[in-house]
Length: 240
Image (cartoon, rainbow, N blue to C red):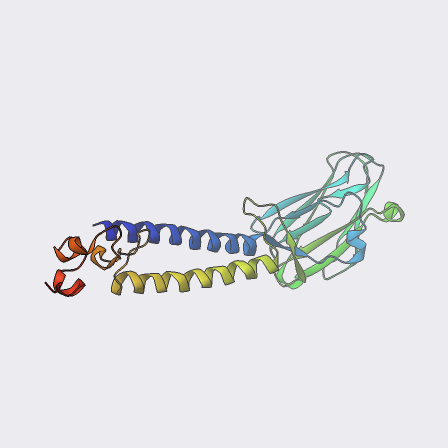
């Protein structure tokens, strides 16, 4: 029973350590997300807000956003084909329009300044890709925006905040190596516990006390059988 308890404690301890190593490595792999690689006109746009609106049928972009009313919000928008984007004027920053700079979509909204004015555009499968657009009167001060349509657009991975602890590549490799070493140790321990005569946490069996040297015994005591050996083994009989 003691052997079984020791074995269970050992397996519990090593199993918990291996699980911790696995969770650490998994956390490192999960701390990244995709982001569209936007053209320079879009990245130089005012405000710079970004939204991944894939899965939504309708999305609104504010025209005249920001403290001075000279930005599109979101500046960078990622949508699915078939999504309708409504450009809604905030009534700030003067007169604005929406026109394509480059890309598959051909947007062209007239100048307007009143709050609540709208312009709708539906992005089709044929317009998959990235379209950069601008407000023509305010292009010199960076009123640009971009819309990515579909999944077939250039992307890059970026770090994101997560409850998991981020582990650098070198540390993750060390964690994997530690996990492999732990598995090897666990396997050897199982073999020894199953087929050996020892248990984890217990001392090795003591040497038979009869084999220990005698101390403080006289020759007569040893001959009488008080020593670790029978008299026949410990000494010859005395000659009378």
